[in-house]
Image (cartoon, rainbow, N blue to C red):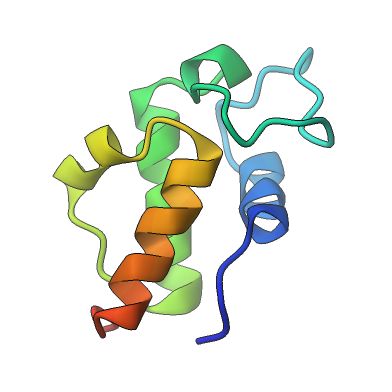
Length: 87
């Protein structure tokens, strides 16, 4: 897998349920909490599920706590990919 990046996460976020229509995902969202972006924990789990389906990376459900912001999610996903946690 090539390195997962914030733009790719933005695409998944735009396509996922839970997006708050008033949030500009094109802006500087990297360090904003997912809750501040209009994503509750269920919406974040859906994001994780989409990443798993499209990239074959196994992400444990409890990892959502380690991914409070888009930047942290990207870092975590790339760390798993480097460790070979693909299915």
